[in-house]
Amino acid sequence: MYYLDPKNDITFKKVFGQHPNVLKSFLNAMLPLPSDGGIAELEYLIPELLPDIPELKLTIVDIRCRDQQGRQFLVEMQMLWADSFEGRVLFNSCKAFSKQIGKGDAYGLLAPVYSLNIVNQSFSGQTNIWYHHYRLGHQSLPERYIRGLEIVSVELPNFIPQNYTARKMTTLWLRFLKEIENQTTMIPAELLEVPEIAQAVDALKTTSYTQAELEQYDRYWDVVRTQKSMLLDAKREGLVEGELKGKIEGKIEGKIEVAKQLKASGFSLADIRRITGLTDQELSKVQS
Image (cartoon, rainbow, N blue to C red; front, side):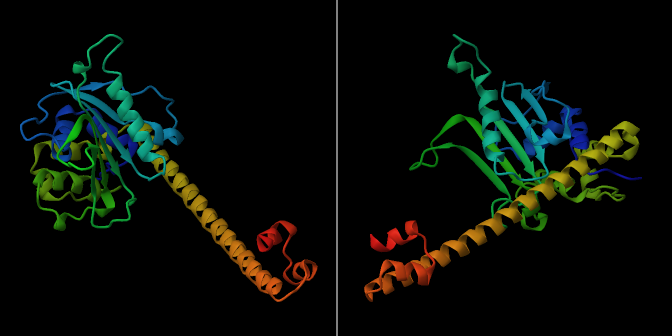
């Protein structure tokens, strides 16, 4: 029996977008909900209607739902980190929050919005931190904050189960996402002991997918590889450009320093220009 990777767009939506009890277990394990305010029931909401184009994956909210208290939950699985990611997450969260009420409605009707984002790439530069929780807090009084928006980003590569034993269900769900890969054949027994995770595992069997879905599954990986290559190329070009600019600027600064010394020694501007190769604009820095 073969299993598919749950981080793929197709599998993630099938696992968490079609089984509300599975999603409820996942959110209760991953979100900073009040101890007495766990999710009891969930209903799916229609996500933003965007073109079904894999290249636009970075703009789409995977799953949007609401619980019995009216709280909304936005859930995304991101394979690649982009500089615009945090701004986009904040934009989607604010949009979901503001659209709860219409003109003339009381602000008291606004319910909290939680954004959960699983990122399969390191982005913080802190290898020992994997859970990032953001909310509108007081600068001097950390315990004081404005309720309404809470954003959680999970840096999946940084999560090491052996280093985290605080919450069993959180650990098991993250192991589900991290340890099951494409063509996995063996599932850890401890994952199957949890009914909701066992149901999620069952939804990853290749036999659960049509041929068209499997082709879309493969196409998604192709898109991810292409995007990753483009991001690496852009980064590489940026580094080369930055290094070249630094060398040029450093070279010019060195010439200006020589020019200043020549001027102090009585050389004419014409001689300084001939010796250093500086332009008139650059030589103006020597005269100032």
